[in-house]
Amino acid sequence: MTATLQTGAGDAKAATKVYPGRAAVISWIFFDWAAQPYFTLITTFVFAPYFASFVAPDAASGQALWGFATAAAGLAIALLSPVLGAIADASGRRKPWIAVFGALLVIGSSAMWIGVPGNPDIIPALLLAYAIASVGVEFATVFNNAMMPTLVPPDRIGRLSGTGWATGYVGGILSLVLVLGFLAANAETGKTLFGFTPLFGLDPVMHEGDRITGPLTGLWFIIFVTPMFLFTPDYPAKRPMREALGEGLRELRESFAGLPKQKSLARFLLANMIYTDGLVSLFAFGGIYAAGTFGWDTIRVGTFGIILAVAGTFGGWIGGKLDDRFGPKRVITGSLVILLFAIVVILTVNKDSILFIPVAPPVPGGPLFAGAAERAYIVLGCLIGATGAPLQAASRSLLIRLAPKDRIAQYFGLFALTGKVTSFIGPLLIGAITAATASQKAGMAVLVAFFVVGLMLLAKVRE
Image (cartoon, rainbow, N blue to C red; front, side):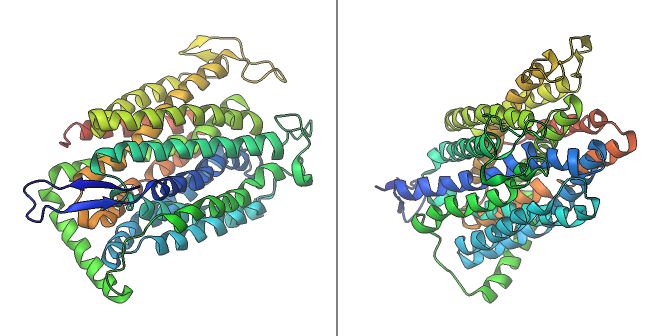
């Protein structure tokens, strides 16, 4: 099954473009499914809160250390992504790059098993493994995104992007259910969320159920990225790697030099730089913040993650349809407004108050999310999950509409650059302010500025 697209009358060749069949598109979508557990299990809902609560000396210093490691990885990604994207455009191939950086993801995430509780000596090696895996998954995503224009016609890009994000969230949900239901147990009861003894004899006291998320993420990626390598066609090779290096760097210089003439594209990349920093920081520290504010354990944080992932699944799917109907800029704008509202309200939520109004605190040892403040945090988290997915999906859709088609990987590299060049600033500010004030709330408050500035810049972008 193939799709064709007739080009406009202004094209002298009036060529008809042929797109691959459904199997190729579905296999490409499964990349998001394969990669999402890294963000769900490692950076947000299981391993990061575990690190802050049980590996680091205390929650505040754990949030600070995690922020510094995230910043270091983000800086490396920012510096290298446009260069690698330009080289990939010049060489033509995408899959070899995905394979190389996918291997870094697998190696780095698998090594995170070493993060035993209460051992500060392991922290440097553990954070290095986290940084390596982060670099791997981000670069693999850059080259996977660059394959999108060859898969569907332009009027279906939004739906493809949104479906990919929604599918990824489903994969994240299933990976969380697997970990919480069968692998990670409460250290006091020795039982998982479903009341089972952990599989494979995983020791709850040593938090092996939390640590296994690293190797599980690597294995999950290997299994579910394989269909993309088998069934999704790659770009044909254009030139040898040595020639591609020189050509790619030359084109990259031209692209940077030409950005001032492409005002909407430049403004969008700048806006993306700002609001993506805020979004990534919000996701990276949401679980840590909840663990510190409410004292949630892995099961509670993970259950919170499942709820958010469900919201994100529907948000990504609906956002893709809205993207094709109303355009990606409107989807991004609406998402930013909702995110800004949610983070402002979250900053007023404490264990015993909402919007500075006192409420009954949760009862120790009581049922899940019994406190009014906990339930409010979950509602706000659902808003974040439901808008974060369409924000990211519509952003890559808008880039495809704005960027030159013959340099799409290069501009996805610039897209990753703008998503990462200041990505160390958000975690760095959160880490520094948290360390200076010993307050998680003060550290998270900085995110408000990122969403406000991003929204103001986006207003000047013309599709």
